[in-house]
Amino acid sequence: METFEFLVDDYSLDDLKFMEIINDPTYMTSIDAVEKALKAWDLLLQNGYKIYGIGGSDSHLYPDEKYENADYPSLLGDPKTYIFAKNLSKMKSKRQC
Image 1 (tube, rainbow, N blue to C red):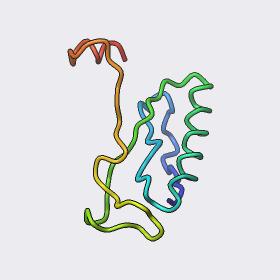
Image 2 (tube, rainbow, N blue to C red):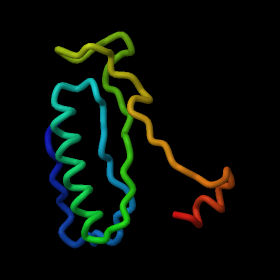
Image 3 (cartoon, helix red, strand yellow):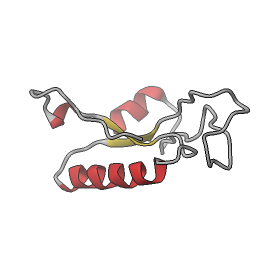
Image 4 (tube, rainbow, N blue to C red):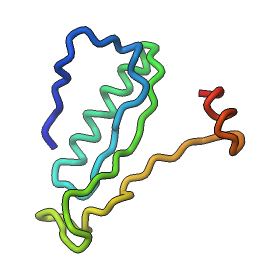
């Protein structure tokens, strides 16, 4: 995956609420991209930013197609994002964040 250059100069990191850490695990450069994203996210967390890490699921292939050198097809829903919640109330969960 190519690195993404954020081009908005006047964007405050205080406004950042989440960051995609993991994307399609079957893509050939995904492992390296995840490592870089984890390091960037960790640096932000260490500097006091409260940013949620998510897994992005988007596929650009048909369900039976695979990227070159991939063992598995690229599927929607891989990876997934999970949240820990003390209850199943939408409003209570939002207040805990």
